[in-house]
Structures are given as C-alpha cells and as structure tokens.
Length: 591
Image (tube, rainbow, N blue to C red):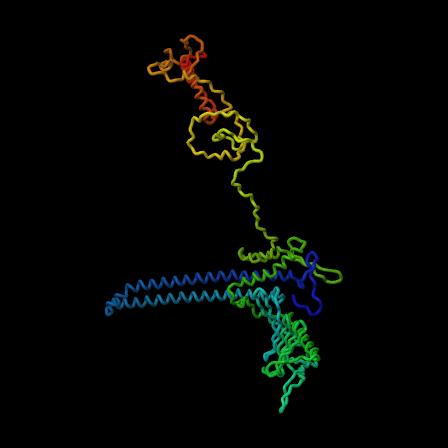
C-alpha cells in the first residue's frame, strides 16, 4: 500500500503459495474499490434521472407559458378592436380594462411558471451536489488508505508565511489525477522555520564568482548553507528537489539542489545567486546528498498521515464538474481487473479470492474474500450499471461465445453413393399415392417392367426429383395395395368381338330385357324360366374385367369400409339385379 522505508515490506503470496509482487492486502483494496465504483455508478444513475427530469420540466414549463400566451392573444384580439373604436364610451373603457387585465394575468402566470421551474432546478442542482459530494467522500475514503492503481506519486512540502503545507499528488495512466493533503505531526523534523543546519551539518557549495573592484576575476567562493532556510521539497519518482533561500524574503538568493535516482547531483542558483554555472566540488557531494536523503525520508513519512482529498481530475476536468462520474469507476475496475483475475487463477478454493502472507518463523497466514460477498455489494445497482464490473469476472469465467463449427459446403453437383445400383431404364416410379411416411430399409425385389400407356394424362407439373440424382430405395408395397406386380394378367380381348357393329345390325344385348318374367323381384320363391344351359363366353364381361383392372391400377388403394347391415328388402333387390345381369351376359345364375 505505502512505501515502507522502515523495515522490509510484508510479502504476500498467491493462494497456491506462488510468488507475487503484492506488498499490501489487495483483497481489502478490492472491496473498497468495488464500494467506490458502486457509489460512482449510483451517482451516474441519479444524475441521469435528474437530467431527464430537468429537461421534462423545462419542456412542460415552456408549453404552459406558450398556452397562456396563446390564450391571452386570442382574448385580446376580441377586445382590442372595441377599445380602439370606442375609447370614450363605457364599452370601450371596459374593453381597455379587460385587455390590461389579460396582459397582467398572462405576465403573472408566466412569471410564476418560470419561478417554479427555477426553484425545482435549484433543488435538482443541490441533489446533484449531494451525489457528487457522496462520490467524492467514498473516493476520499479509498485514497486515504490506498493509492490509485499504477499511480506515480509526487510528495511536496512547501513553507509559506501561512505555515507549512504538505500534499501528495497521484497521476495515473488512465487519465485520473488526485491531490491529497498530508498532516505534519509535531514530532516531524519538518518544522515551521526549518534551516539546513538542523538537518545536516557542514553543508557547503564551492562556486566560482566574479569579484574585484579594479580588475574583475573569477575565484572559487565557499557558500556555507547552514543558515539557509528550506522553502520547498519535492519527492518525485525520478528525483528529489530541495529549494533553499538565504533569507525569509521571497526574492532572496538561493539554490535548487536536485538529487536524481541514478546518483547524479546538480545545483542551480535562483534569483540573486551566483553565476548560473555551478560546478559541484567532490568535497561537497557528501553533505548535499546527506541533506537530500534526510529531507526525502522525512517527507515520505507523511504518506501515512493523509488527512483528506483536495481535488480529483478526470481528463483534466474536476470530478465535481464532470458529466459522467461513472468514467472514474470504469477506469478503476479496468485497472484492478488483471490482478483480480490473476489472484482468482491461483486460488485453489472455487468462489474465493485467496492470498497468503508470510509472518516469519516459517509461518504464514491465509486471507480470503468470497466472490459472493463482493457480488452482494452490487445488489442496489440496476442491470445496466452492473456491466461495468464484468471485467472482474466475479461470477466465474464468462460464458464464451459459441463457436460455429464449420459446416460442409453444400454440394451443387451430382451426388452419388459409393456403391449404387444401376439406374432404372424405365420411367420414374410414381409415388403420388404412397401412404408411408418414411421408406423402409428393406429392398423390394426387382419387378418386371411393363410399358403401359397412362390412361390418365398428367395435368399437374412434375415436382418429383431429377431421376439422375440418387434416390433412396423404394418402399415395399403393403399387402392391401394394388400394383403392377400384384394384378392378375389381363385377359386377351378379341378384337373381332369388341369391334363396333356395322350400321343396321342389331346388338344382341341392346334390347335384352332385364327381367324375363313378370313376377315381383321381392317374391321369396321365383321359378327360373330359363333352363340351365352350358355357360357361354360373354364378350362384355371380358371387356368390363379389363377396364376394371386398368382402373384399379391407376387409382389409389381404397380401404374397404365395413359393410352395413342389409335389410331383407335390400338383399332381394340385389339378387334380382345380379340375376338380370347374368342373364344379359348369357351366364347361368348360381341359384
């Protein structure tokens, strides 16, 4: 946390006992950084709400003033002509008074609306100041005990007529600069009237001076610095600078001694001093270095007596005037996130950040903080404000974006399996009436190809796949399905017997009566007038069978419906019709 000039700093290890470069309790620092960032985020949310409220109130007030002014204008247009035309009449005087009252009322209401807006804006400003003061207070609490991440510190002690003032300035690489005031305890050597001889004795500077009344000549003159007063000490990263003055007057002569970290020393005169070129003699280096080292040590002790936050600038703008305090929270979180992630990787306990501290005598103690405790500090924030804490990865490793696996490129050419049976030479299989959803794995036996003309011309566009492309094996035909391999061979039709008769010839079937007898078809007992004869070959029966077979091949299979229960009358009628058809064909009735 601080530089520890007295004794070696405490060593901290990671949770798996590996070495780390941490010299202070980083877990306590993380808690305070998160608390500070939470307040900054809440301040940002409050300021955003205040800005929206201010804008809405300004628009509302402007609309009210415009509406009142429009009303006054319209009413004045009614009474103004009367007041102008009849100024001496009672009506004219009344119109003039009404117009004056309208203007006064409009002015009064407009002024009242503006005053109300100003009061509300003042209250909003005070609320903003309270939020900014709260943010500054929590930042001050953080900086009183810790430094900004990666900040370069510069300590300065200045002696003025008003007293001694000590400050510490921290500059970061992410655009944040903070100045803190330091308290000088009574036991410190940095007293109000500090002379060089109280810090180191026999401090001298031998410098060349031009002297002589008649003849000017350069000679080496020894300047004893014991009575010189210390007016300013700056301890920076690269060097320590000490400003000395011969007397309390502001324009008195003096020197600026600079001791750099690489061991170089330089002395520069101030106003009224010797010549600008001051060569340091080897005998002077020991006293000058002793002076600068003791002053630097005394100033560094003041880092443990931080009293308050003087100022904080973000990108050169004071935080009290910065429009977005959340920027400071984002930069703080981004600065500590790599260290937090490193601690988490070396912590053996899941859900915890663990550090170990060496306490001597081959002993060490372990300190930890649970990530659940850190996440609990974010409970009061809205979801969009929680996003700035994502770099800490307190909830474990963030979900990695899904990586799309490379998909095989769509093949546009002809696709064929490794082993494919020979392509069919006939027309493609008509699968319009397939009832199975998926083809079965069984392979149908090869069927005999029949070339039959399609009795029904296809009128719809062929949406089937290209026969040249690979197709899965056809599904086997169910038992109840009709197909070309399940139909009985068609009987041969005699062309002579089915040719159209010549004109004038009488068809033997055209005038054959359906019923030979006059008896009722519903009679229970009916004699057959036709004696049994030898069955004759009926040409019409063969034709009807051929047509039926062709139609059964073209139309889809029909599921046989369950026959309805027949009444006695229906059975008799059916028997009569069948007998009539048999007699027309010349075939004997089975009964």
